[in-house]
Image 1 (tube, one colour):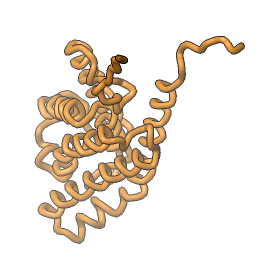
Image 2 (cartoon, one colour):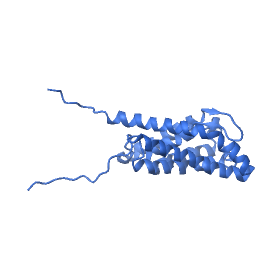
Image 3 (cartoon, helix red, strand yellow):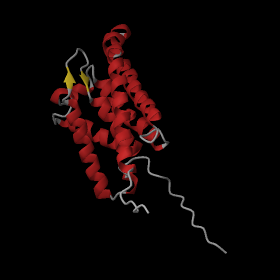
Image 4 (cartoon, one colour):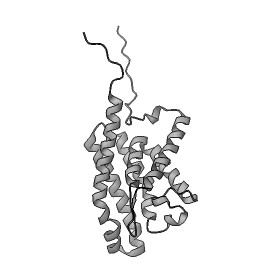
Length: 201
């Protein structure tokens, strides 16, 4: 009788393979991820009342690479850093006042966006399927815009919120979604390359 061992372990959705790492490694990943998010905040095009940054690119990428749990945790850690005074928000801003101002809705949406993109990545919408990865990134960017605009509408009215908080960011959202999907594809391609090859006969 032949014994056949069947593995029930699912293939890792992310080239980082955080699901199989130690607690120390995961803690380091959260720190590095929050640093990446902070650096993305410094890439800014000033606009009123909401600036254009690379934050949504970083948020969706962290979600896709870390998964919904660690992605949301990392993004939340970054926001806490900003709230307590570290200069990690858009353009090096800091302070709790940014969470109750015009950008508050976008900031509060970030952990939700990371969790949604991470959840989709865990179900195959990742670098192994680049079009699905693009769709996941696009959903994340759209969700951020919808939640952020809804918050802004309470402050300045729906028409102005859509004009200044939604429409100017559509093209950027498309471009950042494409860049995010391409980045995931590069990560996956690098990890998929065989390390050891048998010599050809």
